[in-house]
Image (cartoon, rainbow, N blue to C red; front, side):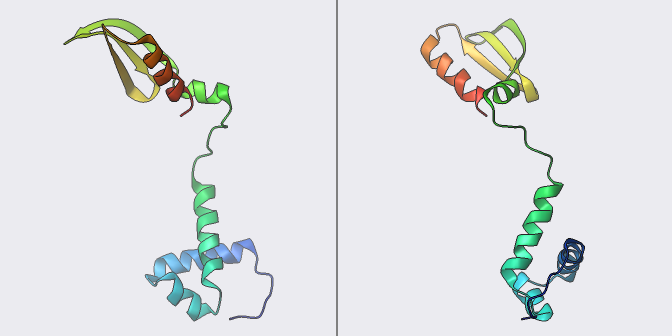
Length: 113
């Protein structure tokens, strides 16, 4: 292992890129550099997390927004009388004989996604 010294973020980014390009396992690459495998994996995770789109805050208003109704229209499809078009091209078909309490629970779950 290398002696403890501060290695900057830019250096870790280079190391992670070299590791990805090397085709070696994390253990092999870390051994070659004399670094801890856990630290190498941590930095890979940190850079991947940064590259992902930011997640929306988990407030009730934000989660309700994810399941916002785009359109409600009557539809007759083999026993269904309602179709709720949700964001993300999702559709919810509600049969003519539905249980209002069950529908309420389902909508509450969708609001928290």
